[in-house]
Length: 279
Image (cartoon, rainbow, N blue to C red; front, side):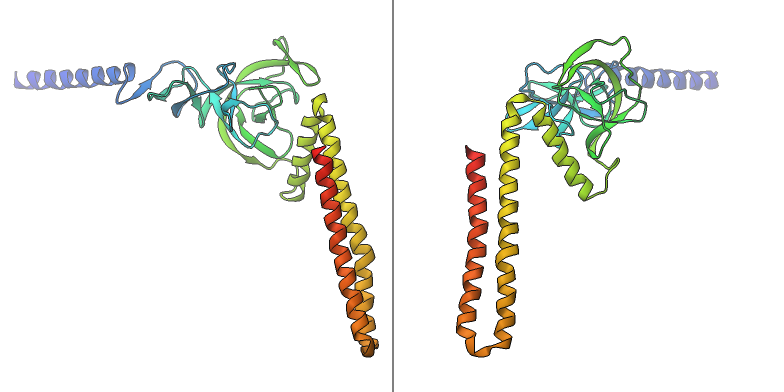
């Protein structure tokens, strides 16, 4: 009889523990809300989104205007992905939307940079809020956990015409990813090339691109001309000083003049480039 009572007590305690666990999963506990729908697997916080057109799955970046949809390829300020119903949310008094910064999230993507395969790195694109496949070194925000070929998918406007758009799960991890170029020189040229192409894709920015290129060429030419012209004179003057010490004063004056002309040439090039940029 005592054994039966003991077994009943154990079963009753086990039932209470199960009931308590189910209650904690179904209802908020200490400011955290656990949802049964969604793909986020980490604690997600709520942030104020200043971009009113941002929707679930859009990629968000940090700007001086707040959190808005990313519209720059390989955006180094990528912040996260909007998820309406992540698995675990930490809610505060802030009125905003949950933004996943780690874990797994459903992300809006396009075929702007080609079809996406499982395991491809995903990065921001020039289409606001939408991701694309990363094919070169740069800032990425995760790895694709599903393929997307674009077949039968809705079309959206891209910088060079229509592209397919959809949504796939992505393992979020915001970092700089080395894919195809050397760490230093490749990163520099890749960044310059990406920025240039992004500006050229917008006809309004072509004039700015031309001005920046012209300004850079003027600075380069001014320094090149100065070093090729006056630096040679300085070297010859130093040699002459060793051969003819009696003409020391005249040679030193010549060296000072050449150095001054070298500096003035560089300053003229810098000033001219600044004037071109500000025109």
